[in-house]
Amino acid sequence: MYITVWNENVGQDCEAVRAAYPETLHGAIADAVRGKDATVTTVTLDMPEQGLTNALLEKTDVLVWWAHAAHDQVSDELVAKIRERVLRGMGVVFLHSAHLAKPFQALTGTSNTLCWREAGERERLWTIDPAHPIAKDIPSCTVIEHEEMYGEPFDIPTPDETVFIGWFQGGNVFRSGVTYKRGRGKVFYFQPGHESHPTYRQPEIKKILYNAVRWAYNPNIEQNAPSCPNIATPDEKL
Ligand code: ZN
Image (cartoon, rainbow, N blue to C red):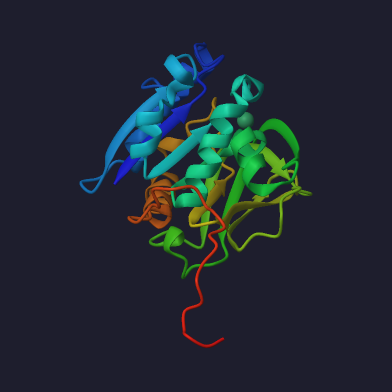
């Protein structure tokens, strides 16, 4: 399995982010998803072809995407290529503020807007689908001491599955872990992970990321884009 962790890495060269993630945000995410069954590469927006060359995208089985401040800088051409590869079978995990990432919007067809509050509130992340592969070995309630509040209404299509619901100290609730099937590809959105809180260093959260990329992995990605073939009748008679 080839995992590519993409981080826009904009505005993260500051004391708050360095304190939470001395190894960089994408480094922490890569550390969470790493395993003997996987090769993990990290790339950032400032790299050639915005970090995702055709060659890298074509060998990526699961793409993990963290973004916040630079959604608009991602080219529409790259968004179209990501969407097509998901439809062919690539898995994709969108994290935290990637709810507004253009590739996620291209896959949902909705605005993916929500309400938010940056107050470092305690979050209780409830596992509401304990039999789901992404929830394997995850407790019924994971407490995150400090997290940005994301609240409903969350303008997404009705999820195929809702694995986690977040409750925040201020009283808001949120569909914090949701899945979709798009074409042959699997999509997971996961809310925790504000850049100035060390959420991705918490064991339960790391395990969710680890599980999510393995759930999203499809070993049989189609070589060609979806098409509408004109086909012969399977039998002699209709
Ligand atoms: Zn945030």
